[in-house]
Image (tube, rainbow, N blue to C red; front, side, top):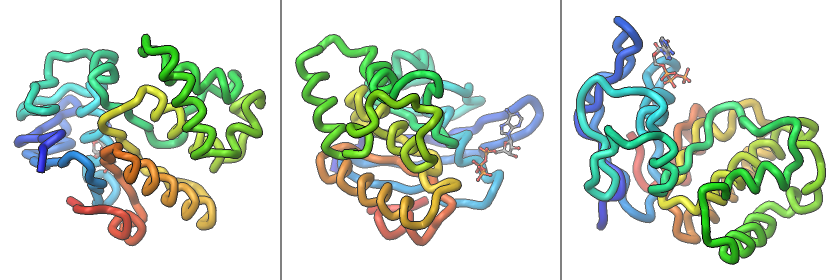
Length: 208
Ligand code: ATP
């Protein structure tokens, strides 16, 4: 067992509001770990703090033992953490392909990027069919697929997913969770926040 990500007594405040108090957790290499909790429990805050989008008040965030607290959010992406936010944020005026290209923007290994494009299209055949379509016109499920595929193109060690099932029809949710399982089986570690606890527990190795 190798610890990829470790949170130690993490606390985060928004002004006077204590959003997170002394959270500790571990994500081991190769696992799917889920965070489950009621609205307002601080799940999104946890993910945003890992990605460097919120500042911690105290505690530690360690990626393979390295402290991330002074690392910028863009450098955190380069270190191998890719965060798919809640609400499928794609660039709506750009095509599917242009969105995917942005996912690979930090990479210099252009030949491998081409291969990873191919992999993404194998994983999400619907995106290949629609590669010239404007992303804002995709269905909700397709936009979620695009957001995940774009996240994968940075070739992350750790893929962070914030409520991938949100607002999607059950059949699409099922499809997306199958894909998440496949991504994990191909070697990407996953940290997942999910309202649908049943579904999350089904695919997770461990949950908090
Ligand atoms: P949900 O399941 O509803 O998405 P969550 O567990 O992801 O909830 P967070 O979004 O992390 O919870 O919010 C934790 C707490 O911090 C909540 O009380 C929320 O109102 C508060 N909070 C979140 N973002 C901010 C902000 N930018 N400014 C002030 N308070 C915030």
